[in-house]
Image (tube, rainbow, N blue to C red; front, side, top):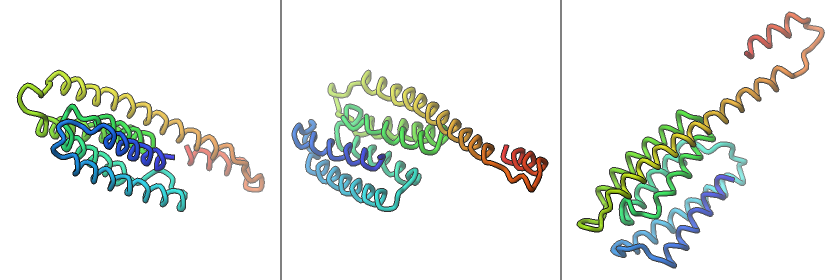
Length: 188
């Protein structure tokens, strides 16, 4: 499902950018080509995941997404970029597949990358909006933390459920009660 959602995100971004180009249009062709490459990358990942029954994605996949989204922010208006919201997809994937630590790591890297790239490639002069830059950066940090916390909690609950399933497995009476108690304690 994550691979198909990445495809939806990539193709919708390409479609929206082709309909309503971002301003300034100085790097519009590079943005279009970059999004087309990302669409191809997304389709390849989707095909691999459907054929191989991919469980949680590897760490490299969402880290590549984070850096690619930073690249897209650099191409389009810095902190005013419409690709700002793409960071949340990578945070969601990391948090709900690997837990709180990975989610908060992706959040912090996304925050630093967004602020650094956004300020470095922001429009100059009166077009730079400091208030938009600050509120988006804080929003990314706060909302990323909340997503990471919820993803970590869900990961903890999955682990507890897995433990309950293992404990609930029927034990072999021929090994005795002490064996069953010992196995249960070992699992705990």
